[in-house]
Length: 442
Image 1 (tube, helix red, strand yellow):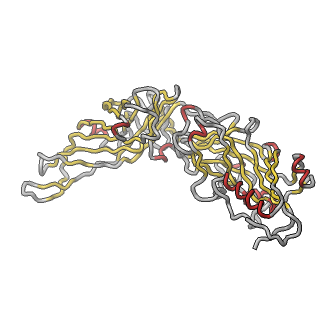
Image 2: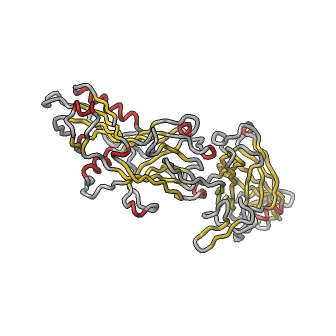
Image 3: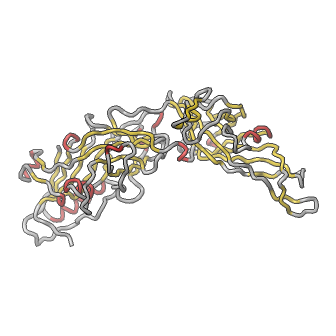
């Protein structure tokens, strides 16, 4: 247990507490910033770091929250980081049945007698989140087996409770080859696949559960983030056969499949991914502190801790590199919520976010890749007071379990990783305590 002490005096209290809030994404409530000179005695402010074994236990990592389909994005990879393969699957809505064209007299009229003669599939990529630095070749194919967009995976086309059907070839194969397209981020954010009339017809029947497109990557070594795709169908109207009109059917489903699927870490914390991971742990705020010696030299030990003495409380995590294939290219947005019934995990109901603000705690991607070892403070001051008191402000029993998760589930194929119990940088509880004469806030 480590210890820091402020010098005596009311002005130092504001300084120390203010610095502690600065380390966090946002404090949960306004903290006292001054103490009246009229108070008897001199309160002191101390910062105490409590080791894992003195406040937490039963850490578990749970996966399976949400589906890649929920992202409305796709990923495409070929042997990325020597391991990851990913492919994006698309399903389209019905084609528009009519178009407004000019007849031989020049009058605009609706025409429902359209002949599909070809088109294009335009795939849009995120140049910042994709790892390639040059041109790559993409393959387009038409799926040949019935598939369920909610449960599809690398191995299974359908994976529901009463129906499990594997792909004939893992990775959503086989497919009917629809050609290739080159995407060079230096030229823009899109790749265009040319389609003939037979290709367009393959996706026109929305009752066909096998209808769909698969986009894959030819060259190994990259992971691409696909932000969306647009199907553009060229049609010849009967009222003006010399003219082509462009139809814009909607993309009904965008999802992705990948292999291998990561296994839960044996010795650490994982947050995020698609489907998402959550880490759950039990907490108990120490009722009394009996060290370290520097603390006891200032405050009589054992010191009985009171809820009102907690000016700030945070779980301090130390980042570590995620698996190479799943390292993020964008910030991971963290959240922490109370778990109301630990026995109901992984489906236990969660309470409201304990992090101040509505956007969670953003951690830059380097913390889980090239720059590990970053300390992240996740504040939960009010929760810690309730936990020490045993009840919340409404008199209900205070939950003793927290869930660490991403604000949006899922958010990305990548995930955040932190050191776990037993490591040299295991999670700690950071408390800022104000100890002294009773202080009543107005």
